Image: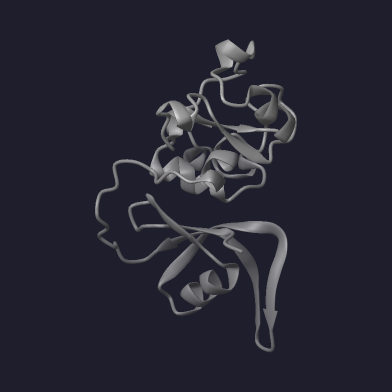
Length: 167
């Protein structure tokens, strides 16, 4: 489970890593803890440190520019916080606004999280044809926003300078 956000030395989000990997980076002096879990601690024979939630690398790492976050079914569910785009209940599937049979693509702007019941009810139709209304328009998250949303949990616990804009 990836639950620690890694920031570059310039404070831009790079990736997420396991908590154990984050602790190793901190102990090797390759990273510093920017925010720790309030109640979790990592303990060893000669070690007792707070569990890192956000770490920052000590040296800048050059990464290729990524213009957009890659689309995935899991990404759509996370973006929509597992809430159905039609009724607001718990979503377990992804629905294509313009059905794939009509040329709809697997893109951020054409997919929404949906509960199985609404996905089945909409079937192979557009929301207008099915008489259904989207509660919110699908949007394309930036790569940084997608990474922060993937961390899950309560985003209000993150510092305000790290909170995603599009969420």
